[in-house]
Length: 337
Image (cartoon, rainbow, N blue to C red; front, side):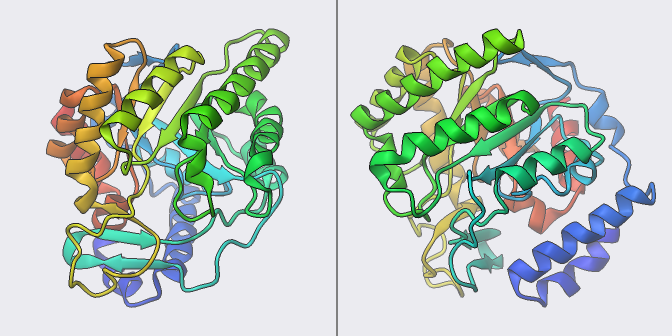
């Protein structure tokens, strides 16, 4: 109800400014006790995925809370898990503004943010000061000015820093807004990167006394052959999950619409069918040997059910939350119940 009143005011503002104002409002509501998880989010059976027990399968996707500055407010909405980031080892401003655009007619967003974040130190400080004790994923990436041939150094550095506070760590190699990043999805580069991360995970896990799951977030723009190759590499390098999918470079579904031709990654409803295709293909190739987290175009109960039916074990939302507000979590949980 409160979001329905605030939405016209927020949508009258630049999308990125509205994003920050909206999160500040959620923080105030959480501190005032006005945010309560819907009963539906607590009435679903827990799911064990990556060796972790998820109280419900609906999660917050990375990108909304890049610095982990709003964890308590997000948790109060009823999510079964949160994923924060993408965070890079060093702070960076991201791409020039404006860089976030709404396409309301398609319930879509286009962003070219460029991993803007305050760096690992700031994120870890925010995590430590939060009261959240649920499942928290931390999504890591490379700094924009790190040469692609040295990208592994950034991922290993970030993993060393965040693993002790993360329930799981997501490796983001699929954002279209960092130059050449998607080259890391090519077979040789992906095998080398994930092999290094797996060895570091095992070392850190031995010292910490627990297994630290690694999920890998992939693009929706891979061909069928490339998807099969990625699936095989994820298995061979002992990854714990795959997140399908990141934003797309396609403009199918937003042609001719205001902001539809902005550069950057497209998310929201137009991504739904492609994301489902990727989930189905991964499910066939992986044959249950690796869990899939579905994200991309999940905007209501039916689309969440479709992702789970296609082979996902969990789902994540972001863009639809901008258009639908917190009531979205309740709707999805009711549908899944």
